[in-house]
Amino acid sequence: MNQQQGANNNANNNDQALAAEKTCINEKCKRTKGNHANKNSKEIRWRKSKVIPGADICQSCYRVETLALADKQCAMCDSRKTNGCWYRSKVIQGGNLCRKCYNKELTKLQNKTCGACNATETTASWYNSHVKVGVSLCHRCYYRERATISTKSCVACGSDKTSGSWLKSKSVEGAHLCVNCYYKELVALSGKECCSCESKTTSSIWYNSKEEKGKHLCAKCYSRGRKRHLREVKEQKEKEKTSAAAKKTNRRT
Image (cartoon, rainbow, N blue to C red):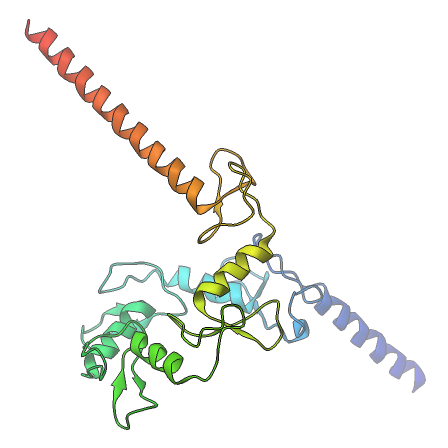
């Protein structure tokens, strides 16, 4: 009896060891059951790859693999990629739609009009107004309404208005920031420095330097460099055009 129980325990331990050794076959992922970043790493669902027989693949990569094998094309935008899964069109018979175009099709079929801006289309979905009963709002106007009726205020500038939605501060617990101050906070927390002017702040976001790998540019220096690059490209094209015209003239003579 004890020997049988011991054998069963050993078998269970071996099964657990084998389960713990699972590694996603996707080289870019290499997710394992024990070192996943999420706290609920043990809850990761595993599948068998449809491409490599017997290979383990995590649920996330399995979805990507399945989409790639589907080899479908959106009947509206001709894209062969979709975010999530493919959908059957309700208008185009036998047609498949990517997620973005499917949402567009749905919003048109709902035949709604935004009660704020009178738009007949929305970028995501239609929302019910919190102020006017029975009124529908487009994605943009819905978030504007939410920001307007909110009692929140920006912990940085004190404003009770925001251009989009209220965002949680990453440095002040429980506090909110307007969109403008939120991005300022992100810049301050990044610890980055412009490799051109050595500034530790930027008016919008940090850009990766194309000349110095691993370094960054502030918005001002990036814009200046981009304009210079475009000017150089234009000058080069003009030189090539002039040179081609000169060669053509020489051939005639």
